[in-house]
Image (cartoon, rainbow, N blue to C red; front, side, top):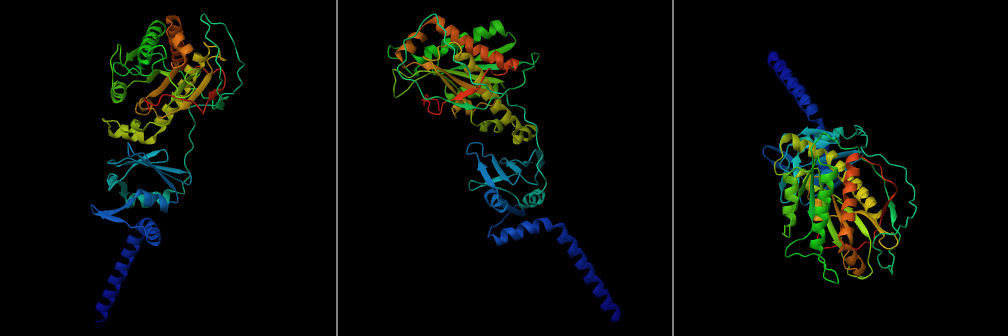
Length: 413
């Protein structure tokens, strides 16, 4: 009897020891689970394990959640850390390190959920300092530009109203592009065929101006940068949907996308004037490519390339804007600056992209100038020089102006 009692005690002690090991092994999960229970957060049981929604996970981490409605890319920021998830992908990003979950993140009733085991692991890593990265773009000292007035070949009529003075944006610079590397540039002539775009008071159509300018930029680069492969979205009076324009650039894996337009205003139509260049605010399709491989998903999750593309787009916009305003009398054709805008062709192209508004065609004076082949050649050359400056990594000459009260085309939004 005593022997049996001893054996039972030994067995119970063994079970307790094994239970202690199991408890220690799951301490990370239990600690987060206790937080979830105390906060009335419900965990879901699916596919043999527990899952937690990203909104609930962000709440437990005392962080914030951002979700892109198009790509469904979700990002949680908390403390000094960042977590990124893509639907139907096991890969996730913790700060700058790509890791892998046991199962893919999933969308359930429109909400993304992840394995609770991964969430528990992350909650323990949350106290590890986030690595600091060296920025690709460095600030450049800024100086206020001195107004310069020159007499052009064709003197426009004076402008009766002057827009509000612009503010100053950050100056950035990017490294030059390797000359031995193939560089693909897609140039987009806005509108076309049945879509005339804006029409001037005397009948000049935006689609015709855009096409002539695009052909002029292509011709300029052919002469000055023969190694750059230039592809036009349209070479004649044809029409492409916005999706077709972006798909063409994405399918070519292009390095740059430049869309050319002339502007129009609803108010002060006959006096509105100025040139401006737009860069994208965001690029959701950068991580929603149709042919994602595992490695590509990992690189897209990091968003380092995405941020680089956005900054380079701003840099290109600043260079083109600088060369454009250099050919005009600033009191007559003012610098309306560069600014971020979610135009379709900017947002849904995967590469560096800008949209240039070369002037207000609704202004009779600007319309008359845009009719001139000499003026068009000068504008095309200025855009071409801006692209050249980007390829060379040229520093900007002065501060970049941004006008918050700009009036731009709404049809391309």
